[in-house]
Amino acid sequence: MKKYLITGLLVWVPLAITVWVLQLIVSTLDSSLLLLPEEWRQQHEFLGTKAWGVGAVITLVVVFLTGVIASNFFGQRLLSIWEGILNRIPVVKSIYSSVKQVSDTLLGPGGQAFRKALLVQYPHKGSWTIAFQTGLPGGEVAEHLHDSHISVYVPTTPNPTSGFFLMMPKSEVIELNMSVDSALKYIISMGVVSPETPHKRQEGDLHSRLP
Image (cartoon, rainbow, N blue to C red; front, side):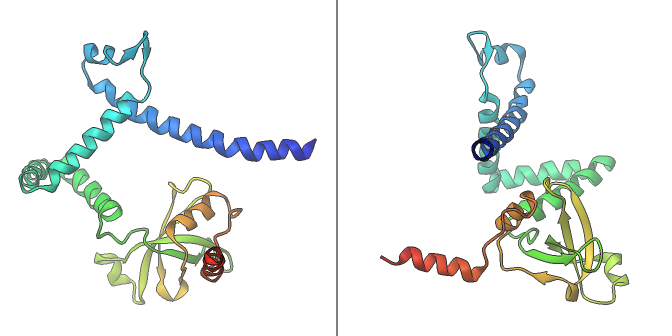
């Protein structure tokens, strides 16, 4: 009986967590409806019940259209004017410029953040964990680091959105061949889902091609 219970849990637990995460994301995006006037919000009700997911669709459409507009010359000019206005406001300038620099690094096509999975010793020598390279130390900090260092982000498990920012000697960091997605799965699963080595993956691809 215990065997069947565990098997059932292995089926339902991942599905339940997936549904919960999706529901959390859609509910958060649905909150954009609060920006609409009350009479407009009532139009999205169906049989007296709020139509779930309408706000998420509206949010995605707005984000997509913003990206389309900001990609052409006219949109870039408007964006430049808007950023110029924000950069003239003392407190807003500091917040906006810092957040924009981080978002450009993480989400921009030329950004190098989270492009490499690393194996580092943390929190002490002899204890290893997975980390991600986020860049190189710069400014005054780099002047105090005599050896070659890199900036790394050490995520916590099972929630990788929180973690620690460290600057470590490059000689003490091992660069891994695994993808960032595989490394994240390894972290979230608390080491249960081990990523395949490149050698094993190539053998699996070869066997899949054989008749």
